[in-house]
Image 1 (cartoon, rainbow, N blue to C red):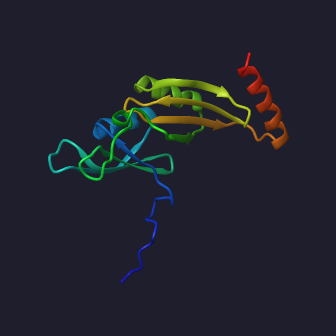
Image 2: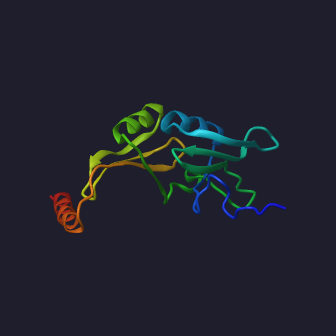
Image 3: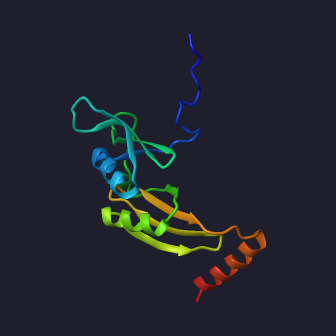
Length: 159
């Protein structure tokens, strides 16, 4: 009998698993917004909800499913009144992907901005209540440069 890997091929040690009201619609949105590739789709017995789905964005797998509060209490961000999690994407062109996501229906929370830590970075919320940060790493500042830039950034926020 072949030995089974403890982490399946194509997965990472940590894999986000999104709970969504309207997981099928969300999967289609992620394809349009982020270029996601659908890997698995397992409908619920009623054929309306998804029990489980898997997609990849770049080299990263993400699982998703519809909200099933009657089965273990899984609830979507909208059912919970918001989310405490931000899913971070590193991409080659943050501005282009950000605009693609907005065109697909995402809401801008913070437009792409050059940040003190060396990323061009923005945040948005998808139509299902999940928050996403998108960034392109643009430089490798030294720790001293980051401290100086952070102090300047914080000072600019208190004007």
